[in-house]
Figure (tube, rainbow, N blue to C red):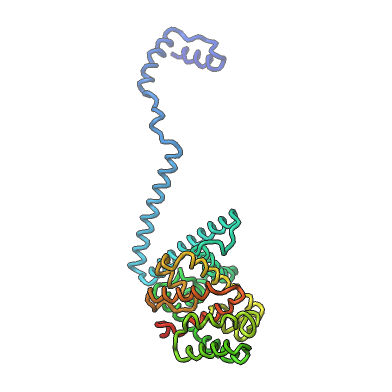
Length: 362
């Protein structure tokens, strides 16, 4: 046995220069079947999953576990911190809605770019979505700026909690806050109504046409006595609002500040910027009105009707849906009858048509 081991070692070193004896060969031949029995047949490759299947199963497992942990976390917050859980839920839903709005706005802008479509050529819902998303982004931009300094994000969360109306968009308001905050905003714009009506009364002597002076006096008298003006009463004055003294380019700084507050725009800007913002905002509403008239008020959901009325000056949160549809129909009749040079009348119509409407006073 010792000699055979030496021979095998030399064979391994010198390229099998030594041939093993018959005894060794016989032992190896007897040992081969045992080795086969000891190791067994190789496994089939069909038992292994493909790499793609492994990744899919891993992702499915992670998603399932994440949902379970998230559910436990929500139940823990709801059980031990109910008030915080309400805020947390609203905040997370608000982020989801804002992200969905951003993706929809991106799709609309991509469509406009690919097909060379202008804003006024879009459908009503697309135009309204872009208009509202721009305002939301402008409001969120302020939060982004003040959170840039180091550790300022902690202060931002505190400010968001203390001043939700001023700093957060509607996606992050509670249902009660939505009603309360809209009432507060409407109360702010109502403060400018007497100032706007007083200015209209003061310019009556400046109207050159006697018939227009009479119509203007009658309209102001009706409104002062709490009467809701008719459509023809307002359209009869379109000539006064196309040039001096009430044309868009003839408005004084104080009047533009009051109209800016009535449109929920900041009045703390120079006169030329106030005029530009009022023109732009009124033009957008006029384009929305044309698209809405093409779509039809009957195709709007109740929430869309109330939002459209609120944008145009009516506090629709406390008015029945049918009353809102009626008022919106009156607004569209006036708006679609006006030309671009007469948009100052549409701007003043925010006050004229809404101030005495049934249910608008609280």
